[in-house]
Structures are given as structure tokens and as C-alpha cells.
Length: 259
Image 1 (cartoon, rainbow, N blue to C red):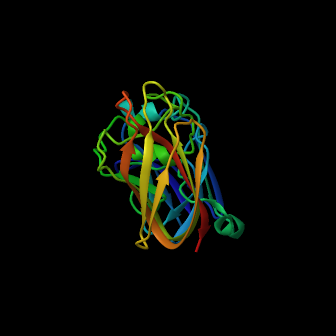
Image 2: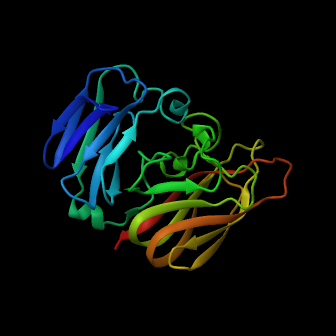
């Protein structure tokens, strides 16, 4: 296994190892810098922490490599002000254990998801314009942050459906999983926000669920039992009939097992 920090064809840092790697990078990042992780084999489950100000999460690399572009400029708005800033950065990678892979877990969590990240899962996408402000992009619903009483800045990141009831929000797992529980944190910046009264959910196995939600800031949980699921897609977002025109989702947690 290998970690590199690159900018175009220039390798700025490099570390090789077997089961666990911790790369210390004692320079400031510049635009175009990206982290590359080369696993020994794929598919593979890895624990990845792209910065010491961002929590680690277990990802699934289906093929190829992990390539993460350091957020710069406007993209930094959805991250901690300490992340990727100044010098002295730590990047941690380790192979996931058998116990981790087979445990009941939040299958949607990926703190290093990016809009154009390929072959790395979980991955969130939306039918809406991905050039949205970073604090409203689909990746925010799987970043582990459940702060939902404000909006428009970190850590109050969310996904905006752009007031389009036909919008869709998809979480891709990249492999078959067993989904047992769905946890939804609505954005609750009341009275700026309204809320979704109803949301429908389609599974890749062609089954569907329909959820009724309340105007609350705490997590709302729904029990399901779906096997052979490679992705789930939220659709039919029905906003409550209120004066506020905005409604959004802060976090979605999908609990279950890898198959």
C-alpha cells in the first residue's frame, strides 16, 4: 500500500507500508494538490482520514485508486477552518479488520466523499446542480455532521433540493449491503426553514419505502429490511405547506451490514 501527495505529475510526498500508514506532510497545500492512495489489491475496505481535523471513516474502493483533491478557495467552506490549513498535516490509512467490515454499522458514512470521486464508496449524488455552494452539496449528507440548527457554513452543512420536488438524492454503496435502519436529520433552521413532510425511498432491488417526518431537529428513525442493495435513492420530496420556502437534509445514516 502507498500514499502520495501529488500535483499533476509531481510527487511531493510518498510513504509505503503494509497494513497501516501515517503520512506527515510539513508543507502548505496549494491548488491542485491531491492525495493518492494505492491499495495492494482491489476491491478493498480501508479506514481513511484525509486530515487530522476530519474524522476517519471506512471506505470501499471497488477498483483503481483513491484520489482526493485538497479543497481550495470556495470548496473550503464545507470543512473545518483547521482542515488542510497551514503546515503540518497528518494522513492516516489502514486496512479495515474483519470485525469492522462485518459489524452492524452506518454504511453511508464517508467523511472524504467528493463530487467527482470515482470508484470509492459510499458516494452521494444528486439530480441537482453539483456546482451548488459546497455547504449544500450531496456529499454533506454522509459526512458525519449532524449540526442542523443553522445553515450556510461549517459545521451546519446540508443538501439543498433547490425547491424542486422532483429532485433525487442517491447514496451509492458500490457493493451489495443489507439495509436495516434509516436515520434522517432534517435541517431545522426554523423559521428560515420549512421541512419535508414526506419523502420516498427507492432501493436498487426495486423495492420502495415511504417516510412521514415531523418538524423536529432530532434524528428520525425508520426500520426497513432490504437485502441486495447497491444504492438507495430519495425522491418525491414533499415540503410542508408553510411560508418558508426552504427545506433541506443535514444527514442521512444507513445502518445495516455488508453482505
